[in-house]
Image 1 (tube, rainbow, N blue to C red):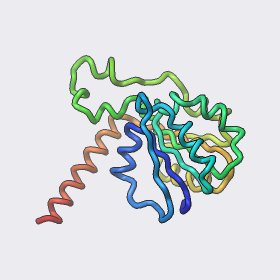
Image 2 (image 1 turned 30 degrees about the vertical axis):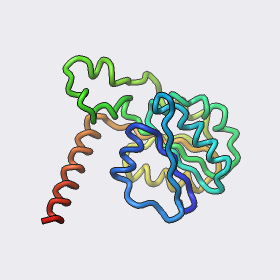
Image 3 (image 1 turned 90 degrees about the vertical axis):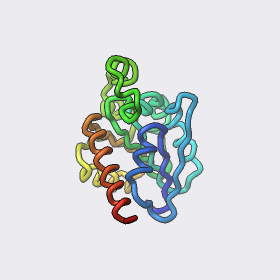
Image 4 (image 1 turned 135 degrees about the vertical axis):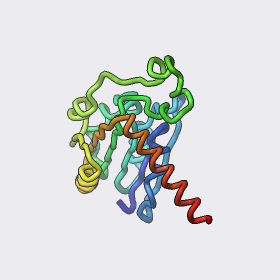
Length: 187
């Protein structure tokens, strides 16, 4: 919402937001940081920013970044008394960013060493640590969940599971359509 802060995790979250988000509301600030390992400290940074930010805060991160920093949610989630803090966890079963890199073509090393599917239930982990937690499976449900979460105080975790392969195909399709539109506009 207007007056809000969006904190983006490193890896696929910041790239997807950059490529597909469109314009934000006026007065919305965007932040991101890169931890030592890229994804570490995402929730800790966002909660630190939220302590000083006067409006609502949204965090967009992947499943591995969430799990890497779930300790912060354990210490801050239920005791949060500031404006709405909404955490959207994009769950592609770990390591989806690597699907977009050349290593994904390696016949044996890719799945074994770059894809890191966690053996964790994000929604079950988040439920006792936040004021509100739910999983959504469509863009309409995500939109509804975001609108509701930003209207209530406390910490909300919205878990968005999706298939890595379908996501990669969608990215390629959208990039191709964007490229064709750019070529047409320049012709």
